[in-house]
Amino acid sequence: MIDFLNKNIDGISKEKLNNVCKININNNFDDILLINWENLSLDCNLEIIIKENVKIKLLEMGTVKGKCIYRVKENATLIHNFIFLASGGDAFKEIFLDKDASWEGINADLSTENVHFILHCYLKDENSKGYFKLSTLSKNQCKKVFDINFIHETKKTISSMENYGVVQNEASLSFLGVGHIKKGTKSSQARQSAKIMIFDKLCKASASPILKIDENDTIASHAAALGKINDEHLFYLMSRGISESEAKKIITLGYLNPILPHIFDEDLRKSVEKYILERL
Amino acid sequence: MKKLEIKNLHVSVEGKEILKGVNLTINEHETVALLGPNGHGKSTLLSVIMGHPKYQVTEGEIFIDGEDVLKLTVDERSKKGIFLAMQYPSEVPGVINSDFLRASINAHRETPIKLFEFYRELDKVSKSMDIPMDMATRYLNEGFSGGEKKRNEILQMLLLKPDFIMLDEIDSGLDVDALNVVSNAIEEMQNNNSSLLVVSHYARLYSLIKPTRAVVMINGKIVVDGSAALIDRIDKEGYEWIHKELNISIKKDENKMNNVSIGTCAVKNAIKK
Image (cartoon, rainbow over all chains, first blue to last red; front, side, top):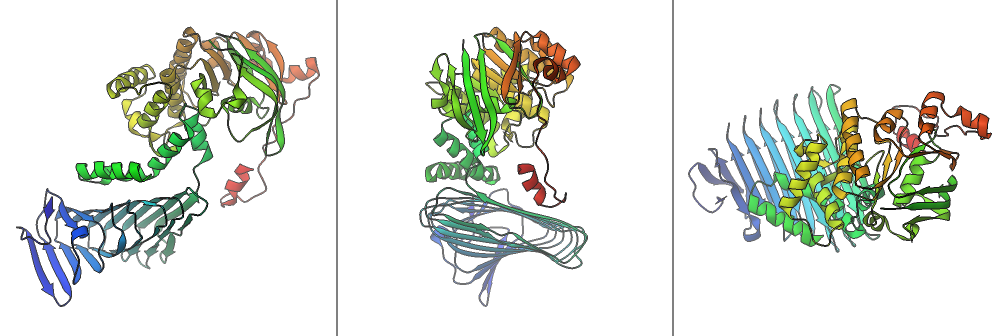
């Protein structure tokens, strides 16, 4: 992994203008680029520019106060992992996708603190694609809000959002977000899905994926499901001899584990899997 | 090596009585065909034996080798050797099929199965069932075709080797080749001395697995208990002769749709009702 914020790395240039720290990523990197916010703070807004035709994997551990902007230039790809294992906090991210650019973001959140995560992904040019997948566990007295938005600004753009959450004890969890398909964005596609599994009486959960569609020639869908463990699923597993507590654990893991194959570092993937098991 | 006894079983769901005094004994090594028109309680009976929480047993008893089944939880029933291959197996998102299968096997063992041993066994059984190994890495029943779901049920049966097996329309959604594969698996369990209670609407499956007895359920009761020759008669004549010969009026299936517009979310509610 390359911890690139505080080091000089070939292929990465940095400049500071007014209140913005700009980082240009000019080359492909086979290694994962890392920002560990657990040990850092920002004294300016951060802007990361992924240059034309560049493909990178960016791992961000934890959250940081202040705005982070990511500009994915023409035909570039940003594969993006947000991993919150310990501390929570506020995060505000903006992603701008140029022509044929692609952003694939996932967020595995197992933090034991409040989280308020706001993300806006702007599909600015033709054939740009944005995908986001979230697995989160909110327990004890945590309050967690994920506000994930995709804004389709031109035709032939694709967005997809899948948010999965488990809420336990007296915690709360809220999935917000708007998929906005603007006028003139013909042949665009937007999908939103939000599912929350509720464990205890004092939990609070809400999911309101919103589609704003100003163009007729589009494909769009949204779905939200909140509820306790499905009785039919529980019966099915128990009918094979699995105890009720083990069956509940397996079904709950099924909500959170699908994020694992998207975590690109193997050691981190194992850590996240361990955290999921421990936190449940 | 299991004997199942059902005595005067009455079962309700949401206040409506479905089973109205079922009496049935299935002896060791028997394969019993459970026949009857749609909506008369066959699947309900199988689900109740397995312990589905949706159904309330209001009266009656079920014993397996003399032990009171109704006092057992669903997983305890499985550990006693009871197995239900379901008509509509649940799709469980995010749960990997092989993880589920391994957990199921481990639930029946004192010590967990070693990974290598598990995959060797899974490979062997998958091959015998004509199931590609990649099905084990998919989410449990999610996106499976009807036939794949049924084969996955039978694969579980082969892995768990239960003593008392219930098959609920296991042949629906299977093509001819798959039906042969499934019937071979059933035969293997018959040779393993398991007892079976089999629900199917088609004589084809029965001709392959050769039941030792057949019973007919009408209006929530077993009204005919006889030899396997009953299967051929019902296949040729339907159930009307029961009305004529035994003077039992056969209630029509009451599962009706509500008056709703198709294409709205109301469809979901209508199906539920």
